[in-house]
Amino acid sequence: MSTAPRNRREAVAEALRELAPRLPAFEAEATLERALSSAGLRGAAPDTAAWLALVAYARHVFTEYDSLLDDGYDRDSARHFVLDDLNAILSEWGCRRTVSDDPEEEAAAP
Image (cartoon, rainbow, N blue to C red; front, side, top):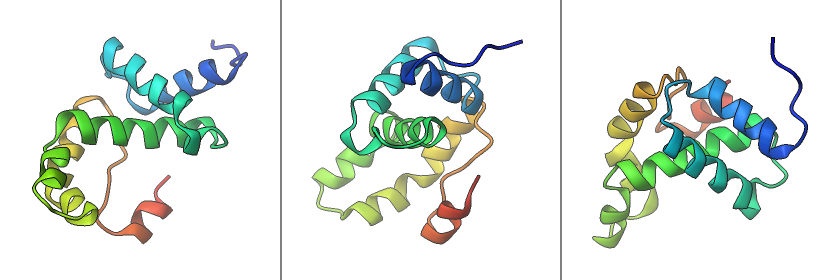
């Protein structure tokens, strides 16, 4: 039986645990810090903040995304090229949700 989170950190951490139950502790802490420190995520619901921070963290740390940007690819192209690697790492972490190339499909995802 779990108790209700007492603050934003706990709420986002709980959402992250539910979202990616096999996320290693170090990665979970780094993702949590990203979710809490991002100005764009401060007003987001905890589950939204957890998801967006998790995707951004995995994309930047575990894919060639930044290298592709450095090579001159635009953001959408770079995201397309790392999509399979990104979804593979999310799956390793127990995430049932995936990232899509289709913005409408992504927006509709639970």
